[in-house]
Length: 212
Image (cartoon, rainbow, N blue to C red; front, side):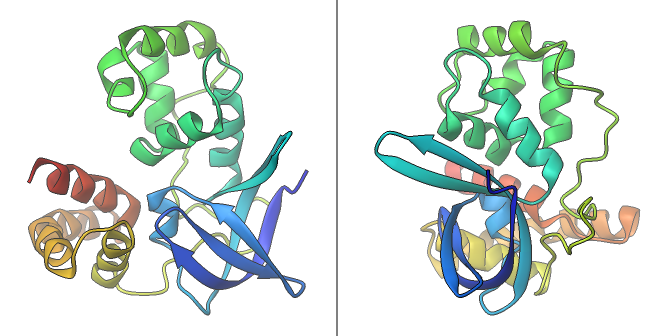
């Protein structure tokens, strides 16, 4: 199993990135929140999970080891494959996934494309006793346990968010409009915690653009 990759980011696309490791470019599928933290030419560490199929080998990348472990655990539930597990983490950070399952928050899980009411109830039933405490800090900014640098912001939050939205298919004008609307939210985050959570802003931006 490839547990992590650490190297220069060679390319970023709407659904992943290419990380150069030992002269080899590895294609890694990532959530929008993780993609938003990557910058071409910079060095990054991604926790990874290799999914093997008869006709493919797919490497999924995550901001930290906790996110990767949750990705793998989600797939132990009936009807949950790697793409759906990744979709869950694209909508909710690990702490929110644990909270939704532990509190049987069906509506929160139904926000994930591909999960209906029955699917959410099944996830809660099968994973409630296995996801761990909701008090675990699963912030994207948490340091990687291995001591290697985790995915870190390399550009101002406005540039990161705009780049991620454009990469996901929105026009520059639409992306800049969403960034402008979310500026007060970013200011609140900065005042409360001393940092801006780009992944949280990206999820909010996608919701705003989805309604427009």
